[in-house]
Image (cartoon, rainbow, N blue to C red):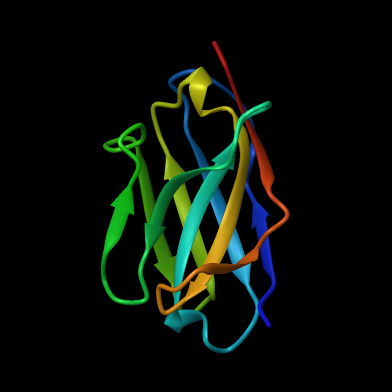
Length: 117
């Protein structure tokens, strides 16, 4: 079992920055691919970025060059640094965990990010 708790969301003006954190329970955090997804009101949840249990990252085209994912396996935490935020980045951001790159099987409760124009 793994529990995920996101934090760091909030209201920011366009062009601003936020840093999200996702703290995970469990002793095998380093074996999980960790991902960030987001869901805007009235839309489906979409992939934002992930970081593998092996050294690799991937990003949605819409956030490349603006968002950076990182992880600290000593703290069981994954981070999402979001710069140059745009109103279209608004949504609930969810952290997910996938064991060794398999399907995402654990999710956090989400944290709201609102970017005003």
